[in-house]
Length: 243
Image (cartoon, rainbow, N blue to C red; front, side):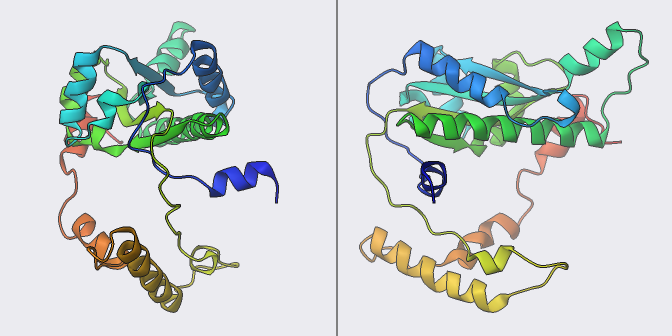
């Protein structure tokens, strides 16, 4: 083991932050670290909106499902998949650009996630806490309008950054044997069942006995209905026809 591996394995989501601001020099170094992430064909299909306006942060907190730490963390970022910059740049060279392809959507989404995770690791290495905000996709049209995002750019998730004012436990993950397979895909229901027992114990201990559930039960609300069904139409309106 080494310090980097230990850091990665110690990740927790932080939802309570101190009033201490992140120094500007450190903040910019985090972004530069993000830019060093792998990117498909050097496309760098991402943009970050640093939301500094407090009223806008409070509005986003509401639109994201009532997550007050968006408004109280030191810095709040919205990571956007951006196919406008690379396609516009290619078009200026005289290329006959085709936009809205499914592969472009995937490239931009993956690039954005890789870039953000580099920012997160860099932030945690500096003693900061983070919380990803997938709730950005609850109301993507309103947030896109608020951030004045053009076509071919869409918000993937938000990120709270700041100095932690809490020390939560590390949440257990699935056993390695559940997700690491050799040569071919295989199912391992037994390891999932054991993980359900682990998570039931974790929730029971964390809540003083007030939460009696497991991993599989927690998944039910995510898959018993069409979650964020509006995203397909939203992406089409942003220029991603997914052809």
